[in-house]
Length: 425
Image 1 (tube, helix red, strand yellow):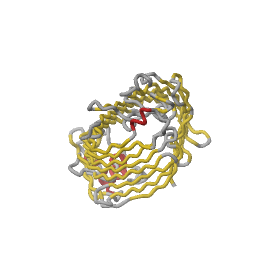
Image 2 (tube, rainbow, N blue to C red):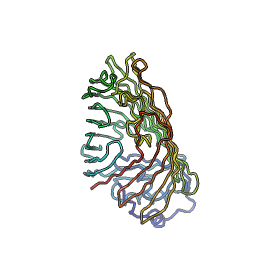
Image 3 (cartoon, one colour):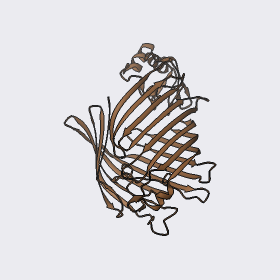
Image 4 (cartoon, rainbow, N blue to C red):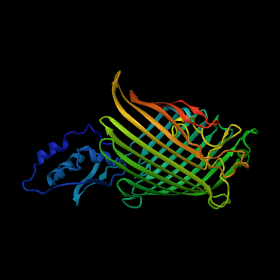
C-alpha cells in the first residue's frame, strides 16, 4: 500500500517545479480511472498525490502527478491522460512479494470468543494474491483458502479459487453441520463500482449427530449432500463524499446439481447511508432470502435460513423462525429491514465515540413440511429497538449494542446485548 505520508503536497511542489505552460489546455474530469493496478488498491493510487476529480488539471499538472507517483518507488511506469471527461492513470507495478502473518482474538455474537490465524502473500504465484485464514471457537472451526489473479483474462476479467470448510456444533442447536466447498470463479468489473461474479464449484454438506429427542423434521433432515453447484453474484456500490452512498448485493446459488434434491438459494441486500444533519447519519438496510427445492423436493436444515444475532438485533443467533420441541428449524424465507440514526459524539476520555439508535423489523417463515400443521411456520412479524456505541481503543475497533424486542413469538430466543471486538497481535 502506498504510504499517505509520502509527499503530502507533492503535486503542488512538482507542479511548481515543472511550471504551468502559458496557454496550455486544462479540463475538469468527472471521474478518475486506474488501469494496470494489481496489488496496490486503486483508491490509494487515486488519492496519493491529492484530489484529481472535479478540479482543473492541465498537461503540466498531469506530468507532476506522474512524477509524484513515480517517487513512491512502487511503479515501473506511470502515464496519465484525459479521455473525454475521464482522467486515466495507467501504471505498471514493480514486482514485489509483500506478505504478512496475523494472529488475533475476537468476540462475535454468532461464535463467541474466537481465535484467528491469517497468512497473506502477494506474488507467491506471479501476479496473484494468496490468503489462508482460520477461525477457532468453542462451537465452530472453519478455514478458507483464497487465490486471486486480477486481470487474468483482460483488464476487466479476473479469476479466483476459494476453498472453504467448517465444522459447527452450536450448543443452541440439536444437530451438527460439516461443510467442505471448492469453487472457481470469474469476476467481471465492467464499471468502476460494479462487480459481477460467475462461479462453479463442488460442495460436501452434512447434517449429523441429531439428538434423539429432536424434532421429527430434523431427524428426517439428517444426511449428506455432495454435488456440484453454480453461483452468480452482483455487487454495486455508489460511494459518495461526506459518508453518503448506497449499495446493492445479489447472490444466486443452484445447489445439488445432478441430484434428486436440487435447491435454489437467492439473497438480496440493499443499503444506504444518508447525511441527516451535521454529524448525524441515517443508515437504512434491507435483507431478504429465499430457498426452494426445484424438483418438488423439500428443503432441509442444511438449506434453510437461520437469521438472528447481528442480522436481527434483540434476538439470539439462530433465534427466530419456526420451531418444534424447542428446536429452531430455520425458514425458507426471510425479510429484515433496519433503520439507524448514528451521530459522532466526539472524544470522551481520549476515545472517539459514535452512538446510534435503531429499529429492526422482519420475519423468518415457511417450511415445506409443517408436520400436518403441527408447526406454525407463518410470517409472524418481529421487531426490536436499541442503542449502539462504537469506538477504537488503541488500534482495536469495538462495537456494542443493547436491544429489546418489541414484538416476538413465544419460541423466539432473546439476546439483549451484543459485542464485536477484534484485536491482532
